Amino acid sequence: MKIAVLPGDGIGPEVTREAVRVLEALGLPGLIMFEGDVGGVAYKRHGHPLPEETLTIARSCDAVLFGAVGDPSCDKLDRHLRPEQAVLGLRKELGLFANLRPAKVFPGLEHLSPLKPEIARELDLIIVRELTGDVYFGDKGVRMANDGTREGWDMMNYSETEVRRIALIAFRTARARNNKLRVTSVDKANVLETSQVWRDTVIEAAGAHPDIALSHMYVDNAAMQLISHPGSFGVVLTGNLFGDILSDLASAAVGSIGLLASASLGERSTEYGMFGMYEPIHGSAPDIAGQGVANPTAAILSVAMMLRYSFKLDDQAKRIETAVERALADGFLGRDLGGEHGTEAIGTAVCERL
Image (cartoon, rainbow, N blue to C red; front, side, top):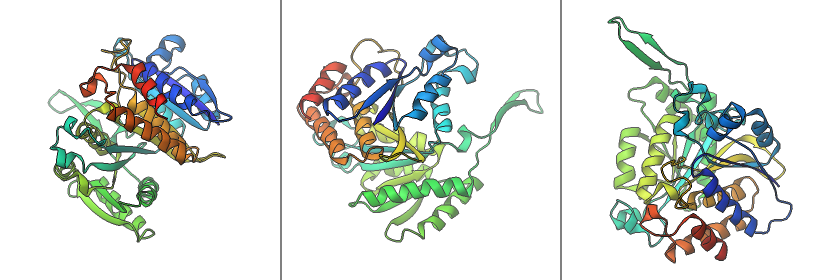
């Protein structure tokens, strides 16, 4: 079992350190970890946010544990050299087209959600977001308009092949959630031709999964329903842009972005399971970096997702998830949740409850 550990910038190394501690506390046989530079720290050391040696490490492993990237001192670099480009580069070079982001309110923490407690406790969903298409990867540029002003443009596009493969991941994810065998596909088919192709292809793909209930929703309505009736969702299937927005909305409903983990998967298999990259959905938070106050819960839960998807160690994944729930229930809350416990204290609390 080989894992590439890419801590990155800001609070990335701090939360990743605690995630690794939890992983080591499980005592898994044959576990080997390799560390690499990524993001702003990689640019400063190697002249590029995603050095070839880091890619080599990632490709040689069975899974990647990723921290966060982002460094304000790099904001004026050419776009292809900025830390954030490392994430896009890893997704592209490793063939990671599917991002899974679970969102669930932990028992006893309903009061931390901006939603009413009776609504918040209904929230238990997974957003399946396409990662390598849409406007983030389409052609883009700046040109002069007829009136002499600058005009920016970005192309949104999806092929049937891209939509079909992400839809398959969504249906598989729904089937694994025995209590919620339903997929809601989110698009904007009333306005966008890209979304019409998306919807048509998802409907076609659903034919091979008659046991999964499929519904469709426009993205603006989906945003409203996620807040007003979150319990109506099981798996949310959507594109790159819409998924980016909706998953952050879901994280706010949970109570803190510091609680949400994610898995980025592709089609590559290893001798253990699916190759993937696992990371908290939060950023590098440079304003609190080095203070020891970042919440490592999302990074720790990312390890649980890694064990489940890339190593088929569901029992060990559940051990971590249960330990996290117990630590939270016992009051080990970070500053983002109104608590006073620091990064290391929360990691220690989870290790003690494994």
